[in-house]
Amino acid sequence: PHYWADSTYNNPSQPVVGVTWFEAQAYCAWLSAVTGREYRLPTEVEWEAAARGLSPLPQVGEGVGARVYPWGDDWDAAKANTLEGRALKPSPVGAYAAAGGVGPFGAEDQSGNVWNWTSSLYRPYPYQQDDCEDAKAEGERTVRGGSWDAHRDFARCAYRYRFVPVDF
Image (tube, rainbow, N blue to C red; front, side):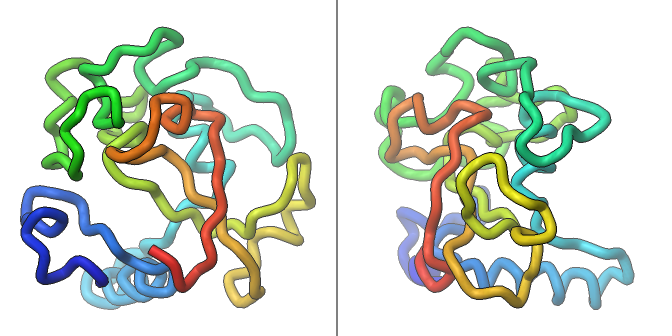
């Protein structure tokens, strides 16, 4: 990963940053082989459903409600590492859990801290699921969750952005 040797962005207690989509996919494949359990990047729909606390999963393009942020509808800078908090670097995983930054399924840092790769190709909503979930297809991939260097609007459960898979 790009920031592997930079202690500001690569501390053992922080999520790894500077990872391309291909490196994230390779890590999932490696972890699956080592543990004997299947690991993969979530689809965009799975990521949003987990952040919002929705079960069962909605269909692609289906209107989704429930929670603007993983903890509820009101912004609280103490619950996510975004630009408003002025940490200005990734925070240790779980740093915001005590403030209630844990999502409904127990996931930490789904809002803020670092962007999360999904397996999905970036397409305007609503899209055809069979057109978005091909891991071998070329195109920009969807990221979710916002980051420590992004405004709180990027940390909303509904916010989506796109990166080229070789970017980080």
